[in-house]
Image 1 (tube, rainbow, N blue to C red):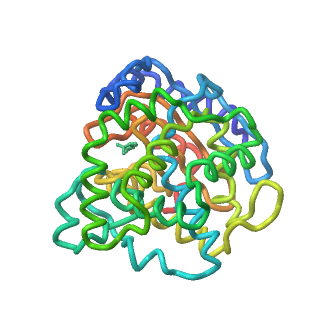
Image 2 (image 1 turned 135 degrees about the vertical axis):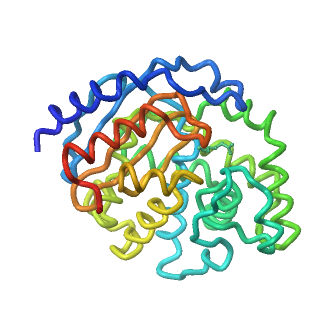
Length: 305
Ligand code: DON
């Protein structure tokens, strides 16, 4: 596969979509990013990386971090499926920050990729490591090979200043006994993990273990193959929120999006991709990013379907 040629063709296809949609503005520090950015990168399972456009420009990973926190919790649980007593694995059909289902379902979030579910996963990671956000940053630095990766303090602070909805979700789950740590610690670590800045290159490389059936960049095993399969499955069904059906229809790959405009997608056994363009559709997914991934699977035939 001539990845570079495919990426150039994908970028040309996606260009008319760049700038469409709305940059997330509910976290004020994110609203300052130019909507005209577009980058895409592919890392194959041997670690070769290809990219075009703004593929080396760092952006806020936001909810993409939820795939990594789930992986770290599963890796640290050594086959114990305990986390699934506290969070489900069904699509929610509701927006990523929705509260309504939590009351009907006794404080057990539908899946680990809506905010409520991600808070439960971060809570578990905090119990396991004592410092959830730093353990994630260190893991991402190691996997991406980029020791410069850092938190964006302005984004984390801005999100904390506008974090009433996430605090409400956390308090509500705590009222059902579904948090192990104090709410302020859980939401702080969640905001910090979301604020990590990475480029398409960094994310495509760091997500390589999902394409390598659980093997890390150095060849050691992070996850059993069946665990990597499960994370990919939940990404396919829940990784793009209430647009997961549309995403499967158009792209057909496990993926995780974030309101920073990034989407990481996995072709198991072949490669991990990351695309970034900040303009979001009404459901919080990058408009140009969706178009690019749609075209990528059309050109390569590499959808799981
Ligand atoms: O919890 C929030 O609102 C953000 N830190 C992350 C949300 C997000 O990226 C949802 N994505 N589409």
